[in-house]
Length: 274
Ligand SMILES: C[S@@+](CC[C@H](N)C(=O)[O-])C[C@H]1O[C@@H](n2cnc3c(N)ncnc32)[C@H](O)[C@@H]1O
Image (cartoon, rainbow, N blue to C red; front, side, top):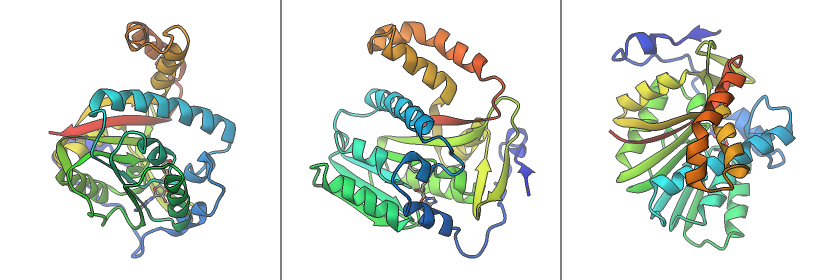
């Protein structure tokens, strides 16, 4: 049953609220999805249009890639992808990271990510099947990716995971996070659907979870303004960062106004140690 999480805004230092969970983790749906054809539809429950998801994912990945270039050393030593899905982002990271570690609970996704990394030419990588809530086999990471993972964890689990991530970040390390959030007049809530727990938090709730884990959000971007910036970057900005930077604020504002009706959207975050 839906339950609001608005207490986050009201009582920043209140203990996190736990949501009801079964004794066993809800792995079945992800295991089933891991057997699907490796496309965005496999990792986005509820998505219907593969064409749209491919386009939106390409835009978002391009934008996140540009941001990583700003935050990370050119050749990060270790990148860790927690909940890697079919390895779309992990495969991209092979072009910059010296060492890569990826984890997912679905054997099918692990097999596909392994296949992609094998064909990448990269040699220093590990992909394992496991639960990110217990995964601790890394240290001193320059980058930890949490792509659509925290949505599927309750507040206590999310805080614990972020705390473990913080402990395993290098001093200048970055956390790249993306989650499906309640936006505009949309209400934060959590619910069960297709046998899965899902928390649709507001972006501000993630700031609080991060703070509890000793992290701080250094950038947050709503998908509509991200798409608008990408559009400018690829057209008027001619893929030039300086030109894009001048025009981007207007594009972002137009993007936000155009989607003021939306109640849910993807939000991308970058975090570092507080
Ligand atoms: C929304 S998908 C995102 C996949 C990938 N990060 C991406 O952006 O394409 C979430 C992924 O996390 C995995 N996952 C969810 N909960 C997990 C957990 N507790 N431990 C390990 N993997 C988990 C799922 O199997 C799925 O591949």
